Length: 72
Image (tube, rainbow, N blue to C red):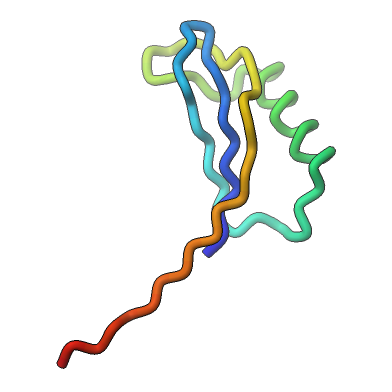
């Protein structure tokens, strides 16, 4: 499963991660940049103490593969 992780800093300097499962591909860097700026401007998300997100820190795609192992 792929996850788009958007990482922000809050007004108090705390790291905040917003994860989006199964993002639409291909991922366009300019669209991601626009999205993180929109999230910051709209005050959509807050950190655990209620502080606004003030800065986009990073974005990345995490691709996780799980392979079951039969132990019977």
